[in-house]
Image (tube, rainbow, N blue to C red):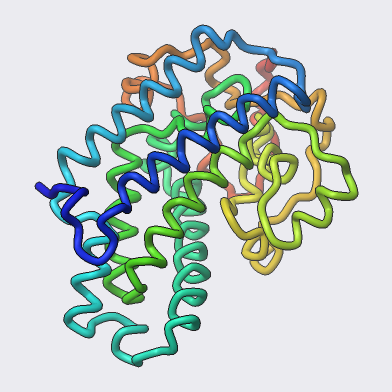
Length: 290
C-alpha cells in the first residue's frame, strides 16, 4: 500500500486531483442549474447519492487495493529508462504531448472494448443505466470496471513510459472532461461545432447515452474527438434530438440506488447492446418509456 503524500516526483499529486475534482464538479453543478440542456427527467434525490456514493467507493477501493498508482509507476519507469519515451530519450515536450495523446487513444479503445465484449458490457452498463445524464453520470462507474480500467492504464504506462507529470495531467483532464461531457448544459450550436474540433462536448457525448443501440455504440471518446471521426464511430446528433432522446438502456427503466448499481452486473439484463456493433434499436417489440 502506498502513501500519496510521499510519492516521488510529484508529492502534491493527490491534493491536485482532489482540488480539481471538487472545483469542476461545483462549476458543472452550477452551470446545469443556470443553463440546462434537457429537462430533468429523473429524481436527483436518488440519483446523486447513488452516483456520488459509487464514486466514493471507487476512490476507497483504489487507495486500498492499488500498491502502485500510475503516477508512481511512471516515475519508476523513468528512473529505470523503460517504456517508449524513456528508451528513446524523447524531447520533454514531445514526451508530454505524445503521452497525453497516446493515453487518450488507449482510453478510447478501452471504452470501445467495454461495449464490444459482453462480459465487460455487464460492468459498463452500470454507467449507462442512469435515466438522466448530468455531471454526476461521469462519476457513475462500477468498482470492478474501475479496477479493470486501472490495470489497462498501468499496462499503458509500462508500454509508453510517459513522464509522471503527463500521467497526472491526463488523470485530471480525464476526470474533468468526464464530468464536462456528461453535463446537462446548454452550449450554442456554433460554439459546440468549434469545440468538437478539439474536445468531446456534452452534445457529442450525450448521443452515446441514447437508448438506441446504434447511437449507444458511437462517440466513444472522452477527451479528444478525433478517434471517433478517424475510426468511423462518430455520430453527429441523436435521431430524436437532444430534447426528446431517451437516456439509458432499454432493459432497465427503473431508478437504481447505490446497492442496485453494485449488483447490476450480476443481476441486470444486458440486452443486445454489446452485440452487432453499430446495429439497430433494441427492438424485440417492447416499448421503451422514459
